[in-house]
Amino acid sequence: SMRKRPYHSPPHFDLDWKTFVTTPWTMARRHGDKELVQSGSQYNATCMHRFSFNEVVPCSQIDRKFNDTHLGRTVGVIYELNHDGSGQPYDSILDLRRDKIRNFLDVAKFDGVAGFLPVQYEYLITKGTSDLIKEIENTTGLQAQPQCKRSPPGQMTPKDPDVEFIEWMNGRVDWEVEKLIGYSRRDA
Image 1 (spheres, rainbow, N blue to C red):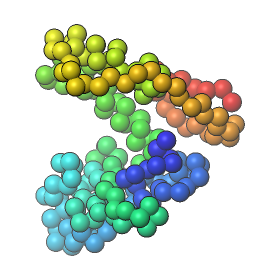
Image 2: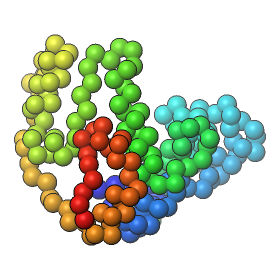
Image 3: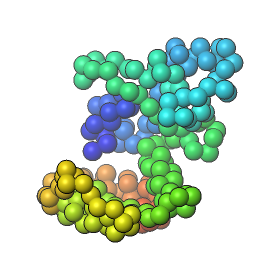
C-alpha cells in the first residue's frame, strides 16, 4: 500500500494511517531549491520530469537524492504540488489522487491516442494480464512479442480496515471521481 511504502516521500515514512492522510503532501524545500529562489531562477527552472518549480518539491536534482536512514538507502524524493499552479501542497494525498485520476482520464482526449484502457490494479491481480494484453493487441493491431510474460491470475490478500478508517475515508474521498474508475464507498 502507498502508506506502508511511500518510496518517494520520506517525510511520510512510518506514519499511522490517519497521520499519513492528514499530513500535507509535501516536504520543506532544501538547499538546492533555496539556491534557485535566492538567485531568482526558480521561475525559469526545469525540474525533474519537466515539472516547473511551482509544480513539484524538490525541483533541484541535488535535493531529490534523500538519504533515508530508516531504510538505509537513497530514495528519489518527489512531491507533486497542487495542479492548480499555485505552488501550494495538497492538504492530503487523497486530493492528489483525485487530480491524478482526472488527469489520467483526460489522456483519452490527447492527440494521437488511439485507445484508452483504464484498468484497476485489483483486476490485474485477480484476473491476470492476458485479457489486457489481448485488448492492447486488438486496439493497436500489433501482436505481443513471444518474450512478453503474461501474469497468471492470483489472489489478493483481503484487507480488513477498522471502522474509523472506513468512515473517515467515506467522508473525505471524492467518490464521484472514484466512481469514474470503478470504485465505490465501503460500508463500515
